[in-house]
Length: 395
Image (cartoon, rainbow, N blue to C red; front, side, top):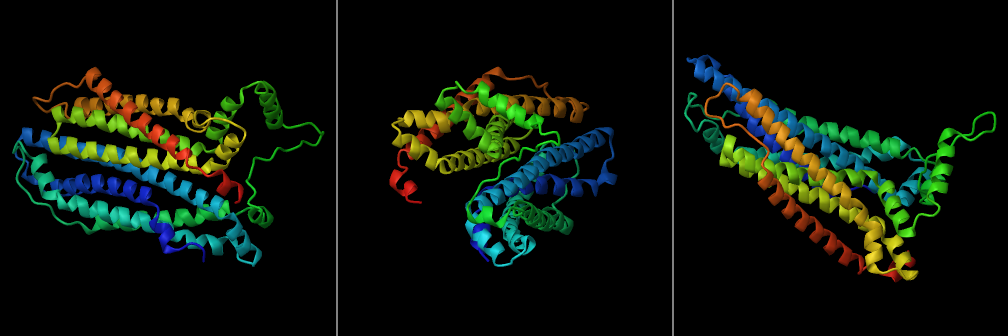
């Protein structure tokens, strides 16, 4: 078995994603379950209004934040599996040549679910460390009866065990799909490309015609521009992580500032920390993989006399507009989400301030993001200078 426990432990990004998702869901779902249990103690219309608002708030936060993070964890798991198979094709090809079936090899990928178990366990435990404080903040105005947090076994099953099993099954099934390649292609470490089909009348398919047309259109495109486009097209999953990292930073940072007005400082700080962690993890993962995946291309460019600035432009600069697009989308998302909470969830609650888009906060967060993103690009471009041409050429 070439896939060991250590390989599953390396998926730190998935663990962090799962930790953040379960942390948020545990707090709000546990609170909602305890709150529902004292519904009969609501003796006034004001209590019922507050009760309904808090229950709705818990559902929205758990569904939107937790759900999105778990989906992103699944996408990240798929990315890791594909990347693992792409970098271990020769070993996998040897196993298939020895008679191992796709499923027999793929079932070893269950170890990737260990990262999910670790992340969900840390998230669940971390939520319970601050659970009592969270309950106090939720009822800071003393509008509801006092109640303490109760342990719910169903949350352990639903937020830890079921996701771990589901991600393990996903890893095995996706590995089976990715291993459906000719053994000789795996042994030669040959990359898979889309196959153009020929129709019965001997004419090229529409797909082939489009590809030929595209080649003709890009015939005169400068090499660096063409290289930049090819880098993005070859790793579209990384493009998602770049956009998602910028999205998380933009939405969470601005949301934490807005939450100071309509929620507690604890909520604002929690959103700030989660947003910063997610943004850093996804951006570092994406850019690191881009640099590693293009070491040979960078080395060959250096051999042919291209400068490090040219290499940086060809490999990294193509992601810049997508990162800023993610930032803009995150800004719109956080505004729409908070606006919905204020106007729908808390519409009957008195003294809740109206929420408007804060241009000043937007500009501050944008400036910080530009500084951090460009600093990261600068640091990784310097790492590209350390790529050894000799080592790459001897592989």
